[in-house]
Length: 173
Image 1 (tube, rainbow, N blue to C red):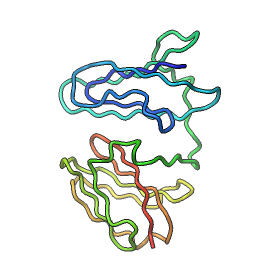
Image 2: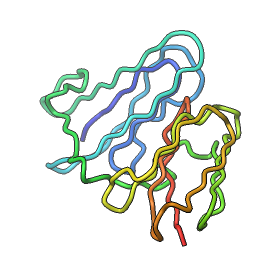
Image 3: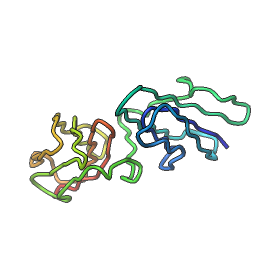
Image 4: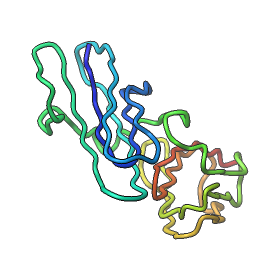
């Protein structure tokens, strides 16, 4: 059993695999929230989302467990997956409710719009091997992207806004 903590200003969330362990989301000053999860021996995916709206900029991630005093998660226990391996996650893992993405499936254009008006900074299309096959850089809250240059198949689309990285699946027919 491990306890994880995020201390943030403003919102943060910590996921182990697809499980939300710490929900410290929302607009707030510097505050700490925690959560507990049981983990088996081995490697586990950790993902921390964070956004800053007003005031200070704080994000710290700590953990504790049997024979481990509460401490910042050290770099020495973290690893990066090989660049040829990407973990595709369900939309529920992300704060993706504030972005619309349509039509899906499509063969010509997709439309992306942020509900709250935050700009979309980057849209990245990854093939089944996790390789980037198309990138679009923008600063608008509404955009249309022509995808007629993509082959038929299923792509992972990462939409990066000021507050989130949203992952969606796109079928090109």
